[in-house]
Length: 355
Image 1 (cartoon, rainbow, N blue to C red):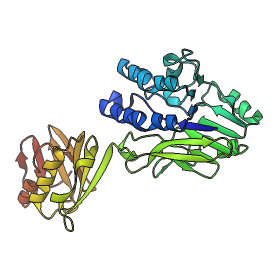
Image 2 (tube, helix red, strand yellow):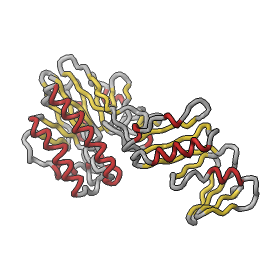
Image 3 (tube, rainbow, N blue to C red):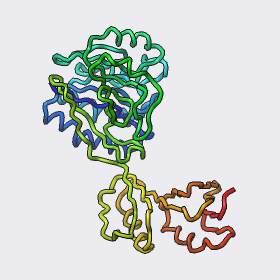
Image 4 (cartoon, helix red, strand yellow):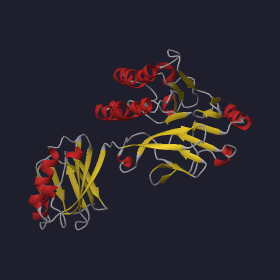
């Protein structure tokens, strides 16, 4: 039996941002559900954090969630098992009130929700489902884990020693030893995929923030007979970085079509030809990006202060972030920097030292 596993879908993320919503559902419409249909997969497990906000769900998010995520499972006759994650719970100390039950409930025969630990069998494989552990269910969950005879554990777990995101290790949470009795442990909660050979954090199916940029995303398929776990990569991104260096590249020939519907950071490494840079940024702005940001290196200008719209910001590491809202004011700044007094530009004040 093949079982699809997905986790941390976070519907309604980024404050119901429609750009992210369209990006999420493009993955489901074009890849996830077609894959399940093509490979005749009839079972799917969601390891928690199906929704993003703990306190409320907007009408639009609820409607899209029902029409574009729940109903395809019904139409395809796929059995869906949903564990409650920490983002699904209204209260931090109990799973009793959660968005999964309120949005799905017992309306569908082929969807089952797990607010408490429970053993489930898929073919010959016994799996212990462990939803989010909190103050109210801690004792009962530890007892179920201790008594469990399941070969495998799947949950929404916070275990110490694994990367929450790329390069950032979590030092808090439960000890790995609690789950040592299981042959394998699959978990949601951390959006970066990592493992130690026994415990596997499967990672989110798509990007949410800039720290996801360059971190491959996707979902998994488990063969319950031989316990082989295959990862299906989601090729879609919504964050892209451009490291601009015109010392060995002609950016007039750079293809910008891949940046459509993406948030883009243009990181300037070397900029010798200001005219070429201006032309490139203008083309980028017309590429239907969701947002374009420039990052300039001001290492040669220590102690830079900027005052924009009455808000004063100083940089000590010499990196400056700005939205492209005008045509490259940096050139003006560099040309005039030999002066030690204040330079006044529209809505911007640049000073040569920080205090």
